[in-house]
Length: 323
Image (cartoon, rainbow, N blue to C red; front, side, top):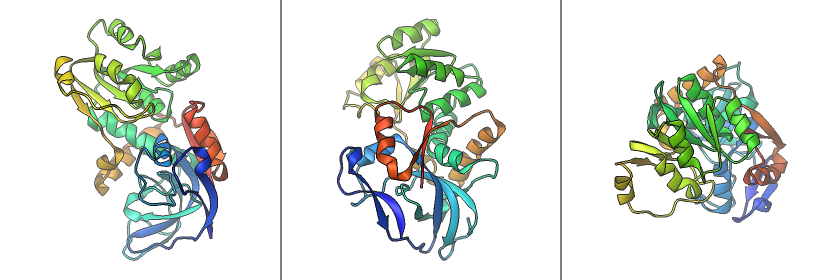
């Protein structure tokens, strides 16, 4: 047997139960890993509450982790028992041990700890595709990053600065503004009520070519109004709730804007893309250009407490669960 957090019905943090479950066996193309750390992400809340549809009940949530390969099924060549590995993507992470497709695992360099690996895969690979592929930023750009003191936000701020980009970070408090600035944001704006006027002032009226928005409903209109003509609205999360249906004509009226709703799964669906995105992330982390801040750690058994803290905006940087 092994331990896992399981959900039998959607709801608040209290629906997560710490239970004994059978130790899974890897089938063809699969690997069994023993987790040393599991990442906590807002998408876990979406699955817990039912905003995102669960594959089945009871459900084990969690989409990133790091650990050691225990055994592999038939036909597996990309990893072997004893390898240090990390992953982001397949649901089922809130467990001491789990099976997942071997081709979703990447080798974790010795220079990167399990805690750092578990904390950075989903958030760090998200930052990579946002900055390097969804809208490839270039030196001299000025961009808007919402939730700039969150897990993805802090990585975006550091990585963008490393690439020569000026970041306007949007945060919810003075404390988070200081954290965002310490991690590369050149400017910070508290709240979104005055965001458009602040961006106009900072950019001399030019506005920005891209907004990275993980907040959703509450910041939608302000984000669109920060964009220069032909700018790109990148809506990649729903922390305040999903964006309501809207008239496509708004994009035309505001300057022939582009809109995308990307997900990491699409950007790393091919093995070659996964290796490239992860390799790029490992490189900037190993070089010190991007530092992954694991600012909270909870025992796996106390995952509900971690969710309470996350939803109350009491966390900064990354959070891990330790089996």
